[in-house]
Image (cartoon, rainbow, N blue to C red; front, side, top):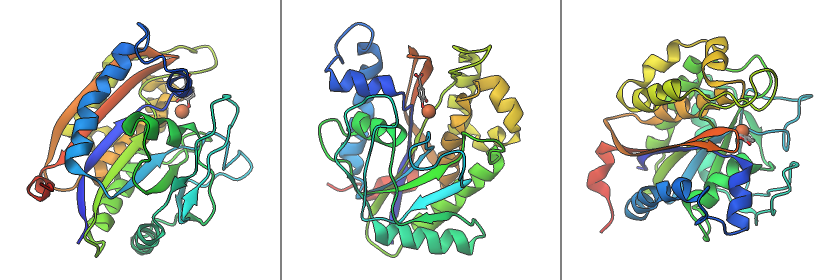
Length: 285
Ligand code: DHB
Ligand code: FE
């Protein structure tokens, strides 16, 4: 059976991709942000995921406002990247895991999560930037992208995203392959890119989320979408992916690492690494 080793949540700001491309990691603006990733790299080196399930939101590259699935999942052998308008270098295609994709689709539809199944899917900065941050200079493990609509209202509720995560966690642990799987969530934390509150950041709410995502994630499912927009900003609702990731962490969870840095571009940049304690005994030598 597969082992769910844990989860990582990380922001996906395009400016990070530009800083990586221009090798500016050691500049004063960037160093405190990039320095936060060492412990996440150590954890990934130790836990050795064979595959990752990546919860992210598309920003108009693969899905536009004319067709917007609430939940979509990739089932492709590889996922091409393209420039959705930020001018970032285009990544080489990311490897997929169609066998894991179809297992997850069977299980999730079986649990009445009716996802849109994509046998072709472009992935944007919300997928590529976190992969570069977590596996700098090398290919990430093969991935299954799971796309959550945080762009066009009505959005799925925090409770629905948490339950999707719980179902994903159960499905991963029911995969009859001897494989180690991590769940990665991207986006957040608080930010608003436009309108009267452009530049809005809410450190107090971000800190509350960083605490509750480990100690009591179900507490975050009580917020309505409107409350999440108020508290985290109209793009800060990307915290829905973090809530979904926390739902996947069945069993006992342990905080490995938290990093929080304001601002990166317009965003409160966060990083959270959670280990599934029941997986600790399975760490390869
Ligand atoms: C920014 C943040 C995002 O999450 C995003 O998708 C695009 C831009 C920003 O802060 O610049
Ligand atoms: Fe975003």
